[in-house]
Length: 216
Image 1 (cartoon, helix red, strand yellow):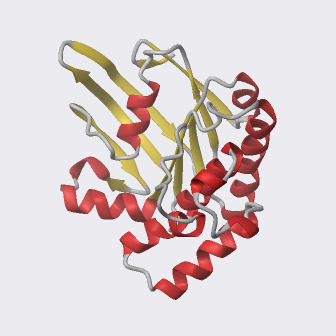
Image 2 (tube, rainbow, N blue to C red):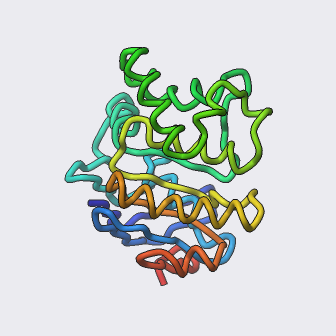
């Protein structure tokens, strides 16, 4: 359901991705591993349409994302891709529920629908009692679960996560990793997760090693 073909990306004179090929099946949980500087985050940003390759194509659900214009890409991303980052990027002035609702607001959904959907997601992630709390009132693990709920808001086909447990202690990291598999079983999403956590990488359906801008 996700294919990247001959992806090349350079920043100035630094070639980060060197003709990389990468594919993921529907419903897979794939861990992308490798040393710092191997190009993992760059690949994730290109798969998520946050950055454009210098050459090559990205296909998601039979759509050549590389051929879309900027407005089409933004709409496609909002509807089909959810993101979870190491730094949760929650907006501090909004409650947990309001943060979760933001992708739906961008999509133009009705407020009542968003409110119901947001509460349902927070409840599934064990955060129903924290819905009205702002990020500063939540623990690190709770903040990251709010970020996961936000990523699920529009029921995307694909969830991309970049070091999602990087700022969590070992107990919260383990809980987050188990949550990804639980969500896959319940919602059928596909997960591509960049991680340095060897325990999680070994749990994934498949582990992809990157080295020097290529899949090794």
